[in-house]
Amino acid sequence: MSGHSKWSTIKRKKAANDARRGNIFTRLAREISIAAREGGGDPESNFALRLAVDRARDNNMPKENIERSIRRGTGEDKEGGSLDHVMYEGYGPHGVALLMEVVTDNRKRSVADIRHALSHSGGNMAEAGSVAWNFHQAAYFAFQAAGLDTNKVFEAAVEAGADDVIIGDDDIEIIGPVESFKAVSDKLHALGIQPDEARLRMLPNTTLELPGDQALQLMRLVEHLEELDDVQEVYSNLEVTDEAVEMLETA
Image (cartoon, rainbow, N blue to C red; front, side, top):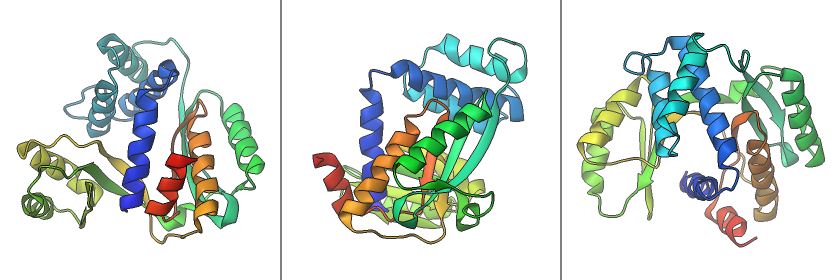
């Protein structure tokens, strides 16, 4: 998973320096609204909302934007219309499976945009269930390893219920069942660790490794999909290698 973590780091840096900061805030606002609609407007009792708010704060989203998004989700603010939370499925080039998480106020627009991006890259939309079976939801954390006692991190994660702790040269990844998220998060906080990524992710049950040039093609497609206004996140079963990440950085 080290390649995936490095790729995620690249994408976070690009987002932080992206001139389309307003678009990032739009996505975060939609995520907050959906979480508030599904579980209520109190981050203390609504875990999904707390995660969404934390991500918004990490991206320096203004407090008033966060509060307005929560009100929209709970129905106190009617501005902007209703939002749908949808997971679309598809295939990228070379048979890589894709799950595309979308929050939209116009499903027809979202599907058209996704279909165009896929077909342009040699991929296609897929029927519901044809891809999702190969993914499962999990708690996922990633952070830099520098200066940390990796034994303490490993022990804390296992005590909190994590299934896997991957210690790389530069970073550490923790994966566990959904219900372990809060316990792992609390353990990391107690160690003074602020993860670069802490969220519930869809992880593939089996992965597909491609030659560097083909992996690069797929990674560019994923980044293009994630630039679409309605797409929140794209998950794939690509085995992201260090070689592919290096090609992406130097391309």
